[in-house]
Length: 393
Image (cartoon, rainbow, N blue to C red; front, top):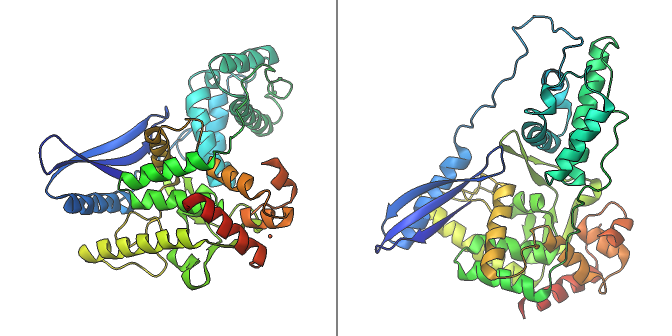
């Protein structure tokens, strides 16, 4: 993901590339200056984005407890950090890529420099509960504290097993603070708010981002599903889109995998306006690829920033760009990319049966429809048409 901005001098452009976030959650950008016309600046941005996406990845720092073959000593001095690092060498890879990424973040931010240094045997339930309350006072929500507790609990369990029962588990009986801040429920934005965000994306000249917003709002697909969408999944002649993959981030790279549940694999109807936006994006991508000596690959990703479409967009960069559009549009800051999924669910609620709503949004049970259907049916076609009419007319 990137953006261009005209500097004060004519034909001097600032190119900005989104690199992700550091361990403290701070956004990292790479900047470059380009002299020339706007179209050439866009080509240069696309080239830099392609190099960034397809270039060599920085290797993860390797964590070792000692030289290969050296026996690890488990006993009264074993710390939470020792146990977690041992877990990374023996069992960490069994977790899902997303869980690994989340756990890495919580470990670096909340554990490693504090309770992680404590001896598991020397700390008691009181100290663990006090630590949880300090996290709550520091602003960490209840879901984050649960994640931290889960990491510490598993580390202590493994330490107990690997020590032959010598090391106790002080986390098992520790209660979570009852006054911890709970996450605010996601609010479904109004039609006017969604239109304002789309208009901002269009007026900014970011056709790709404008189309991402339209597709997610019109179908309710998840962020990872949109990132993994391929041109072969868009059935223009049938006004359909196939959703059967998702993009997730793992250890700094993007992994394409099957969606979260079997029900997440689905085919949904598309309205004529969203289809037209996809056709326009396809034409723009083909022209850009051709001007740079490339051609779009058959299985190219719809929202790719690489000239040939071979590299999927980073899910985090989509969220970051959407947040930027929300701020620039002037709508409420509590709207996130996932809010568009709630927008879809809320908008189609009076238009469809629970089963059709379940099928369109890829929920595994109809109960999910109330919390927040698999060939295409006539009902789904009517739903898509009505959603599109309200969004674009």
